[in-house]
Amino acid sequence: MGLFPTGVSIVTVGSGSSTFGVTVNAVTAISLEPMLVLISIANTGRIRPRIEAAGMFGLSVLTDRQLDLCLTFARSDRPEGVAAARMLGAVGAASGTVLVKNALMAMECRVHDRMTGGDHVLFLGEVVAIHNGDSDAKPLVFYRGQFTHIGPPI
Image 1 (cartoon, one colour):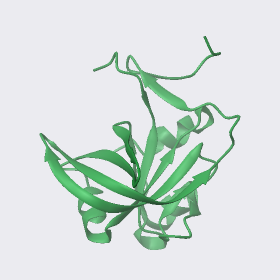
Image 2 (image 1 turned 135 degrees about the horizontal axis):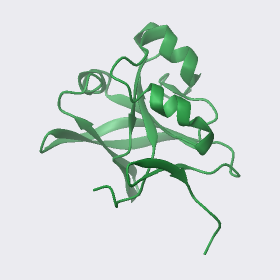
Image 3 (image 1 turned 180 degrees about the horizontal axis):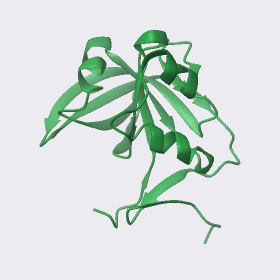
């Protein structure tokens, strides 16, 4: 799977003392009408039951300037609660879910459906709000086991 390049995002749920986030790269756009995105979360992932309970999640697409944040929320000992909320830095108005400040873009999503896919749970989220960031920023990309970014157009 290392030859499959992906964007890098942080999935979040909650706010304040209940904030939780995790770095993911298994994300895809599914539909424009209604606007749907799909995220893949490990069955054993600590965020999975929190998304199920909240019925909402945030999805923030990271820029190449957010590698440190990406690595922090990829760790098993990643911050939670108020510490996580402060690091992530923004709150979505539609859902109240914490989002990543200065992300390339962020979405607030309501869980539309859930299905099992092997050792992961696939959450289909209906986008209820979109927040665009810096359009000149470059997305953070994961390819061949390394983080990189997009180069000049071909």
